Image (cartoon, rainbow, N blue to C red):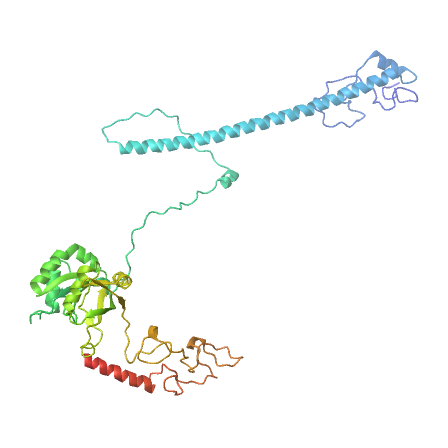
Length: 441
């Protein structure tokens, strides 16, 4: 009887057990293919005992044989479980090793950066020390090249935030200088100039004194002062700061009766009330400049009204011309100390017979002093011009003339706007203003 036929017959051994074969070779440590083939040896090593042999030879399967077969299968499964557990343990140890390597790599990189920073600081400190002094630095370990970072490490590196603090910037100078910024004023007391003194002689004398061609134009004012206008790119303040003594020496030798030198400033006109009519202009000017710090009058004051209008009055109003906006604002706020008293100061409003009010559209007074009703400059209605409407609900035009508008002048009643230059009322006001200017001249 062959080995294949043994145990396969009726009542012969375990019908589920594999055919018995002797152990021909050692079983592999980790079998891959566990399929049972007829010509290949079984991967499962069966324990050959006398009981199992006698059981196969017997007519029926005994309890001891079944128990032995079961124990063999359990032992085989335990071997597979142990192999799996070994693999799990191996992979866990490998993962822990990789974590340790990564932490050491990060630490080495940080130490390398710290060493580079320390080396740079030492070099900078050595450069600041005198050449005679010698310092010894401890030997440092060789600097290894920086490791190549992966894409993920490069992506994780956040860019440095830009600095929010900016260095203090210098005060910017205007790119385009105005005429006032380029004007130097030579103050005079009104004495007539010599016949041989003209624009060219004054300009050449001052430029020769400062040894630079900085003064371009000479202008004579109506109050006998002289204005020196610099070139387009030269501020008057810088010229005065660098060459003031030379300019003063030059104009004293060339221009008689010169009393002062200053930078030009925008002038503001103010009115001061209650000045005694017996006071002279020079006296009031001296009182204002001497007892009110920061106030400069580039020209003498004048009366607001004509001499005949204030002839019999004990006090009247004067017009002051003050240099600088800040000085004018301070004078309006605090007043002016003159003759041991405090006088009220107000802004001078320029208007004449041809001045048209923006509120009532009449002529001869300023808008801020108007007490009349508001009128439209298009149709003479009550609303102001920017709210003008023709009255048609389907017309979208607002604030200006449209096809439905009927023009009307509030002054003459003619079919034109109130600011029409050919209006009879405006022409009469313009003629009256021209007569006043001619009388003043």
